[in-house]
Length: 182
Image 1: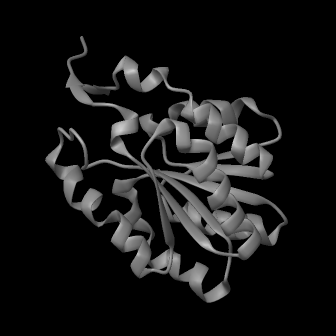
Image 2 (image 1 turned 180 degrees about the horizontal axis):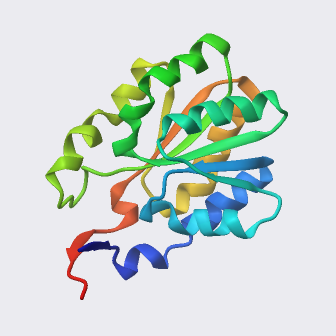
Image 3 (image 1 turned 135 degrees about the vertical axis):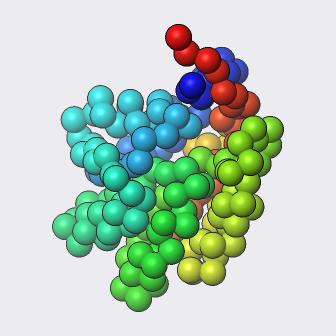
């Protein structure tokens, strides 16, 4: 079995708008745990020789990588799914204690039209988990707002040394369902 995303989710141009906006804000590193919701943004990043991409084994590694990138003079972004946010809680204290800028783009699960009940608890807790750890949360609900929301988040993160999470609505990703593979 695998998960298939509907064609409607692929037809929107919001991943390209996010990519262009990250480039405009001089993001040089992208780290991620593989996720279908971020697949187009991951492809664009891999195709760009000016962006270093790192595949992670767990999401908290991306928090540390982002801090290290900043210390080395680069801007980094962590891509993850809402189910991985809980893995980052202890590492997020690094951001508060050291005032590192941080930006993560989080594809949401456990929301609109979720088929997997295991995704719902963390989907409900994602925003609150970030806020408790001092991370400012933005929501991206509509594809046409992608550039504006990501640009505002980049400015706040990288120019004001703030930790920011953008939660990308599950509705933007489209309805997922289990499909049989043979």
